[in-house]
Length: 192
View 1 (cartoon, rainbow, N blue to C red):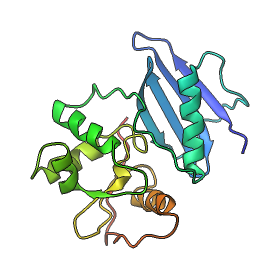
View 2: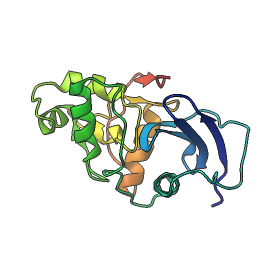
View 3: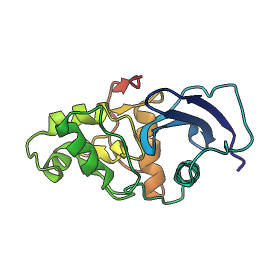
View 4: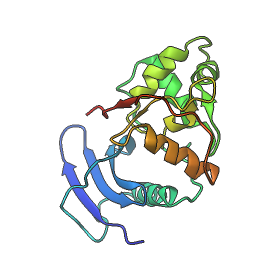
């Protein structure tokens, strides 16, 4: 698969670098602040600007992550646990939850309550749900692997909502999963 990139750079005090790309799951956008990943998003539409190759000034780690995201979307087992992330926008509690979530292995799921326990905050399942809704780096911090008690799929923040969460869970399971979809949508728009 040829990867098409639309690259936008903002050379501001934060050194924000954003790359848009096509994957088999749809268009995505990856942003870094310096060397740390600061945002990943599945986007509804890809920017019309296209490039046939990566910009020369991306680091090897950034190039590798872009390829890993494309490979992951194509169904290749990729471990994102060691990707350096910028979690500075979150509270200390949220950062602890996101760090624990990043360690959930490919193809496994935990409940919101189990993730709270893994992060050292037993009984904080609702707060974990809130932290997951504020996750700016889905897939890398795999909030799709966190489900509600009773084998319910829970919510997911993306333009495609919980249907994308189900697709990601099915992709990692190697086939259809039996997670219960809610009667009404838990769709939330991705925070800017």
